[in-house]
Amino acid sequence: MSAADAEPTLIGSVQRALRLVDIVANSPRPLPAKMLAAITGLTPGTTYNLVRTLVHEGYLSSEPDGLVLGSRFPSFQQQIDSRGVFLARVRASLRDVTEDLGATAYLSRFADGEMHLVDIVDAVRNPRVELWVGLQSSAHATALGKQILADLPDDDRLDYLSRHRLEELTPRTISDRRTLLTQLEHSPGWAVDHEEYVIGATCVAVPVIAPGVTASLAISLPADRAVVDSELVATLQRAARRLSLQLGADTLDGGSDGAEFTI
Image 1 (cartoon, rainbow, N blue to C red):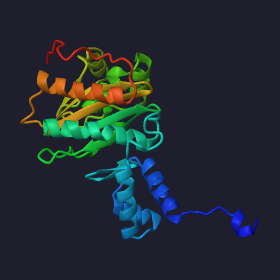
Image 2 (cartoon, rainbow, N blue to C red):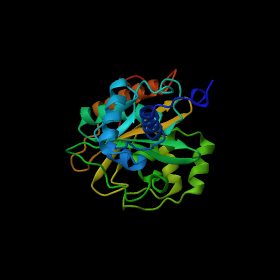
Image 3 (cartoon, rainbow, N blue to C red):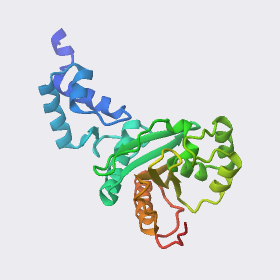
């Protein structure tokens, strides 16, 4: 056997395609094709051709703000810890909520003792709330954070609050620890903040619970037009249950759609 025969034959286009998938799989946000070209140094034409093929074959999926993993990605059905896999799974659910309610949808997750904003899908008529304070410093003032705090075991909740100051972000922010704990302990299974994070916005959140996942799904609405009623909450709860099932939940502890609703 000659030296040439002994060396493996490498297909450059396959290597480049795999590189694109690997970058998307490890990104916490959707990546536009133009950004992929910049990261890899490939020409825009080559990048777009590879992306078009990967989308057609189901290894990538095209979203309005960029590319995420597709359902044929090898670990898509078995693994949710990868940032790219988790993002791809929640993106479709957030988009459905945005289309159903005409409101920007958010998903946050509790991991390694902190709150993390996973993804946002904007609604055209009701754009996102300007996130002027990060979620790690504002969980007590947001529906996203309060829902997760309500779902945490008592020890984890107390530990989190002992490590984070309850800053008064608006005159409506609950900055007293005892008052906040009382509200969390009497949670009806969903959370709301009425201009507690920013004046002019009301946010509503419901839990997303799956094995190894404690998260919350939320929408934001202009405070002067927000109607937080049973229909709105039930729509969010249905979306959250579907997402929980997709993330691997065997049982859901959220009650039925017809559960008693009070404000």
